[in-house]
Length: 119
Image (cartoon, rainbow, N blue to C red; front, side):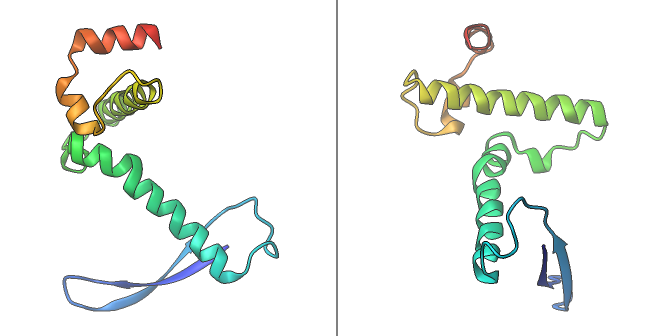
């Protein structure tokens, strides 16, 4: 599926068209164009408002200046691990903290190791 969108350049207020291609297991007759567009928007909204937002707000991931590929992968893995541990603790009712950022402030290295070994 291809979606055409208008992109506004902030530096000079110019506009250009961009085409995004999406792979899906959905049959092209299963949904109409408006429904498919909403599915794509919902998918990206969940990513931006879910893990990406939490990773950027809590860990300032977008501001991270680590440039080595290996180091960047290690940091991403550690961030994902922290998110996963928080979600696991929240799902099991083992944390009273409702916000990921405040949970990370309270987490110590020794407590995190206990969580990893008991998960």
